[in-house]
Length: 139
Image (cartoon, rainbow, N blue to C red; front, side, top):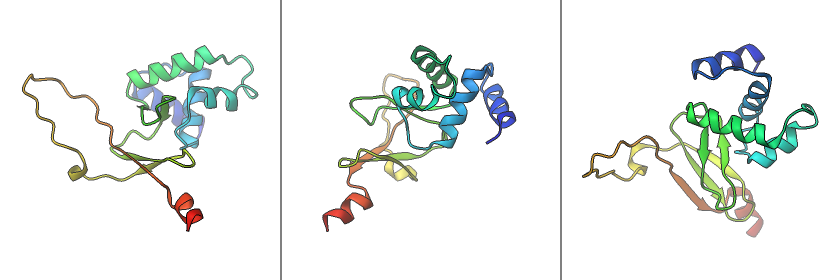
């Protein structure tokens, strides 16, 4: 994905495209691994020496607030981030820890009974088990 596409994506989400924001968004779009703040910082700091962990944190918080990325809570130790914002679920392998995007259909989402008129803004669907690579190792 080129820089102009990243600028347009950020503008579409009302995010001013600073150099750090563009670099972080590009990273998320090119690395569909659902990285943590620490992983993003570690991977980018050598190419962007002025980058701080605080900048990564604040950028991801802003991108999430503007619906430009998803914030995943599937991992009990870390929040992970996903640039793919279309409706989909996630599968976490208990053995290797990798998180995969999975297609879901409406039948996989439990009905939301709303007697108090809550405003539902986000639903996370995830599954935990063994991925095919780890499952084959056991066979």
